[in-house]
Image (cartoon, one colour):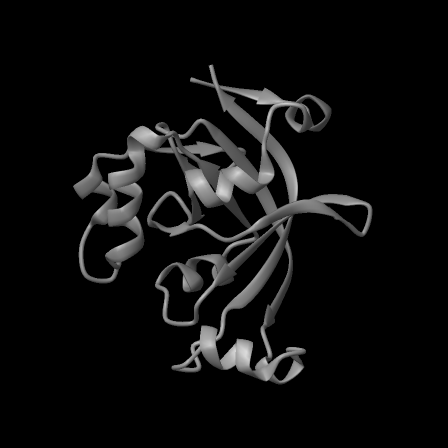
Length: 169
């Protein structure tokens, strides 16, 4: 179902900006007993500390946060436009209140001991390296922070080393 792809080969296949903006992604964490996921249209891929990394942002109110905090790794997975409706549901409902994964019909898979879904086109398995609450006081334009966080629910930033990448066969 999935095939591992090397980082050099992956680099030639992805369009980083449109992957998030147009395609959205899922951030998923958990273990064999329980997983949770959330839709993300923000994120980044790059190099930091001489490592290939993914940067994700999670609001403190998100149920997925507790799963990421408990695990050593998480996945960032990308989907085709045909899953836009399902990703909308996964981003708008909480796993605290319902089995949203079952509701959308996604099938969990574990790749290198990290949860993802068989419907993904690309899965990045990331080892957690860094976690920090964003600080509005450090924004160069305080009005920008107020505009984007009127309720004060400032994102937590995670940086994960991309340990493996998998594409759908």
